[in-house]
Length: 106
Image 1 (cartoon, rainbow, N blue to C red):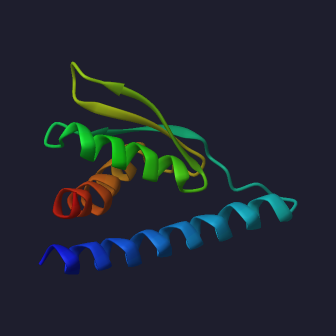
Image 2: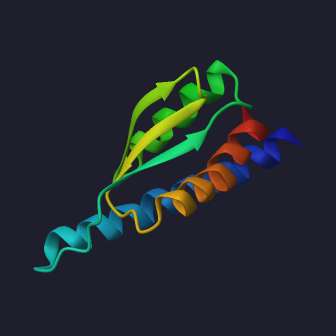
């Protein structure tokens, strides 16, 4: 079962990297900027240290996002996002998409 989750996660992450690359490239190459920088908080209270390590690094490797800080006292990961329309919803989306998949694989 873990192999299935790994393949699903790999396909999801490759798609995310490609879409992020296209979004950033479009924004750089066009005269108008769609950037709306902001900070996102993601709950990491259910993750092990290894899972947090993987999450923070995968988010940083995705264009347009950067993991900034891990707050151990509140179990939150602070992320800078170039395209943050609704930081609360963006955080929930990251928790649903990344955290769930990372818990299944790692």
